[in-house]
Structures are given as structure tokens and as C-alpha cells.
Length: 292
View 1: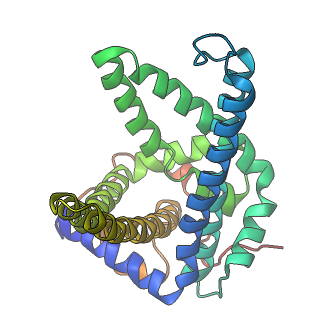
View 2: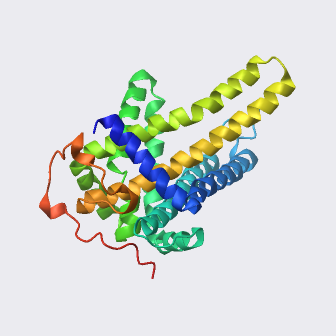
């Protein structure tokens, strides 16, 4: 299979899992809604008590910077928490077990002592990369490269935190080790789903552009609303597909085989592992998460 065929097959298999358990689509929705709520709360706090009351009224007080940092942490935790719930639900579904939003979130709740520290690490890295990207063209290039490397190296961290229930340091090291064995599958999967995600939201963008080009405010608002709704739905589906694939890739990286609807995909047809370390292999893979 070519790289494109593998990416397409990954998306189809992920879609099959999502169709068999539509509750998995709720996690991106809940993450989006919770993120909006968190952003609104911290933006309001910064506006109320974090700004300098001087003539300019646009400079931050120390408490404002503290609130922004806490906001980063809160947003990182929200995204980590609901992704953990998605992974937990996908893992159970891939192993033929029933999955519900409540049950998956209960598993995520049992890993809060793992997820919160990881959210703190993610927020810190995001702040550093964001600051780098503000330092001119060179900073943007370095920040973008660091962000790409970070996303690739940590792609399997949350499945490891949820499924193996290990500490943040051990999870990061294991994610890095698994990446060195499945770097091709990781890159192909993420890039393929990214392209599919862009193609999925493109009709919504075109609809919005048509609404703006109509020259009528009413038409623009109505048609634009349809386009925005399309983009939200498409983004939700693609986010769910990415979480499902992330879980399947974890099992492939850990055991050399994949469960459920992903069985039969020849991941290594386009890429071969760059390095295999037998000591890094994770035994098992014949069962799902034990939430108890």
C-alpha cells in the first residue's frame, strides 16, 4: 500500500469504529464547550482584575500574568482530560467492550493524578513555543519545528497514561521510545488525518466565502452559519478519528498488532521501523482497560 492508501485506510477504519460507537464523538464536543467556558472565565478575570487601571488600561499587572498562566493550564487540562476519555472509550470499543461517555470519563477520573501533571507540562511547553514564535521569522521557524517534534514525540503519551497508568516521566520516555519504532506510521497517520481534516472543513469555508460574496448581510449570516456548523461538525469528527487512531497506534507500537477494525492494515508497507529495541516491547494487548 502507498502512504496515501494507508492514510485513507486509517481514516476509514477509524470512521468504522466511530460509527459503531457514536458516543466517542461527544468527547471533542465536550472539550470544545469546556474550553470556551474556561477561556471566557479567565478572560473575564483578566479584564476585571488583571489589567492596569492607568490611562492606557491595556497593560497587565502581575496578577494578570498569573491568571493567563493559570488559563493556559486550565485549557491544557480540559483538552488532556477529554482526550483521555476518548482514548479510554476507544480502547474499550477496540477490544469489543461496551463504551459510554460516563464510563470513559470514570476511567479518566481515575487517572487525574497522571493527567494534571501532564497538562502542566503541556501548558509550559505551549507557552515556551508561543513565546519563541513571537521572536521574528527565526523564532517562528524554531517554534514551529519544536512544536512539530513535540507533537510527534508525545502523540502516544495520553494512551500510555490512560492504559498503562504510569507517571508523566515514564509515559513521556515510553512515548518517545515507541515513536522511534513507529515513526513512519505516526507521521503518515497524523499527516493523513490532517489532510483529511482540511478537506472535510473546506466545504464549510467555501460556503462562508459564498455567503460573504453574496453582498447581502442577511444572506451572509444565514449561509455563514451553515458553513460554521459544517466546520464544527467536521472538526468534531476528525478529532474523534484522531483519538481513535492514536489508541490503535498505541497498541500497534506496543504489541506489533492492532485490535478491532484496524486488523489487516499493513502499517509497515510504506515505512519500516527505524530501530527496534526488544526491551521496549510491551507485552499483552489481548485486553482493554480495567477501570476498577
